[in-house]
Length: 217
Ligand SMILES: [Zn+2]
Image (cartoon, rainbow, N blue to C red):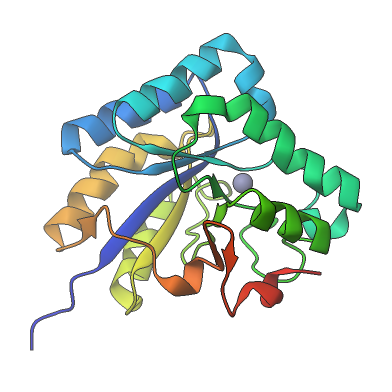
């Protein structure tokens, strides 16, 4: 029986980082792989970081909102704080947003659960027609800069549905392994650029899915 082909939606969180993001973009361009970059809003106040985000958009990648400060998860914050984390980042993103107005809450080491959002944040996301993109594969490049690629290969082999893979364009050295990881994954049959599965999209352009309540305090 043929092995199933892993379909992968590749995402990079917590940037842009001027020391790292350009190298990631160069690898993706050479390999003709499109990704989604979820940006920390306050980093866009640095013009050099903003230029990295503009380059990512110009090179065909999608850009999303990953909160203003990447502080405590929004489900643990006040209504006003949670809304400000989203709204101020949207203002900083401006034209970098695509029509889906992508948003990804921070989970604290990749955990999924009701700590991701509070009611005010969820209502704000509906009112502003956001698409919420979560994840189903966090190989932990942030804590294991040299071992994450092996972990990620295991996740691609083990996951039957489309993989929404979370990596980080951060300055801990993990992205040194990106090019080799992508090459090995393609050789193993992975197809990048996949549409995320409904199980990772609890809200689409402001329309809540059945799962949204699982992510709201
Ligand atoms: Zn994050």
